[in-house]
Length: 487
Ligand SMILES: O=C(O)CCC(=O)C(=O)O
Ligand SMILES: [Fe+2]
Image 1: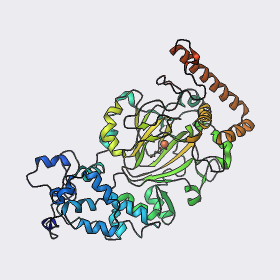
Image 2 (image 1 turned 90 degrees about the vertical axis):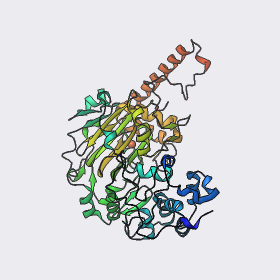
Image 3 (image 1 turned 90 degrees about the horizontal axis):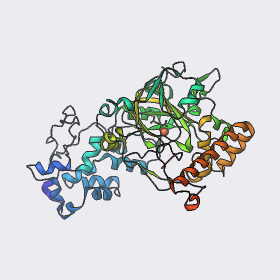
Image 4 (image 1 turned 135 degrees about the vertical axis):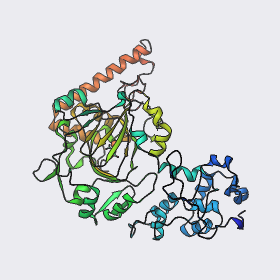
């Protein structure tokens, strides 16, 4: 039952929660005074939850799930009934979901929060209700995650984990020694016309009206520009646009008017044989501080490079066969569940992950480029707002990996146009015409891998080769140097 006494007090009774006030763990005090659940046991005043009566027995997660069914008016109304529900109904994730569900159009303006933007109300006002006796992890945790100190995670990298850094690298050296190793090139993109030219403010001057894709929305750059510098989202909306070249009317490649070109050290990109039929392979990436990519492997066993034009990114990576803490892979490796936000993963798993063999970390600054080898797990977070360009490619040294991925994991192949029935057949056909010697070499490599696995299996089962070896989909893990991408 909701009690009348818990109706919010008149404005003017707000707690003093100016954002300069910092708690001992460097997280500012919640703007409404909400505290973690554990604090309830030390509190001298009764918890606001009492006013829910028997409903207060429901876990906070369930209360939030129920509120997800409410429309804007219902949220506003139920939020007026008591302090506890007032705090819940202010939760910006609820308003973000409402916005994404109901508006296909960009908002007239970004107003600093999803709630203000959805209601087209002035932003920047502090909620006028004292919620200092609301104790809830469901409410406090996203706020704490939106204010974690990222430098705590990106600094103090153990020497053994440091990602290799090179000023320059030649193709032969890459192909022979480094195509399966993450590294940062520090002196490679300085001659690109976009370097020093593309930054968030300049892009806003030139392309303010152009619409770019940021997750589920297409917003004019001017709106996204406002969002970048004025949001408190735990997982900020990330601009990841594959059609940027068309939208910006720019050329990429080796023409004289190209604004950037792929670094030469990575050599020829064998997916180029697919021409117009190749899957999406380049993206403009722009995001606020704290935005980024949760743990994943890049599609179709491709490798990638990622060049920072503005800002800096913290990368943490693991080899293909690693079991990354907090990342769960289904038995057939087709589903990857990484349910935690970047901030939650850092809080819960970073220390454990950093101590594991194979962990590689580094900060890629503006002017630098990261190499992500085929099959490597990576999580990336922007330490500052910034702009990056990324491309996926197939180097010669990973042709066999890409062929076996397309052939053996057809249900996981992504990015090809729908009318291409069998990407593997198409790729083999085109390679056969344009690079028959590379195709033969890759098939030979795959045959050798198969023989090696068979031999290891025979050794493991004491010579009984028929006891379980399945040449079509071998799934027994032999440790870090195993060829399978996912254990
Ligand atoms: O810049 C980022 O957020 C990382 C993007 C990514 O995963 C990649 O380039 O492969
Ligand atoms: Fe990636």
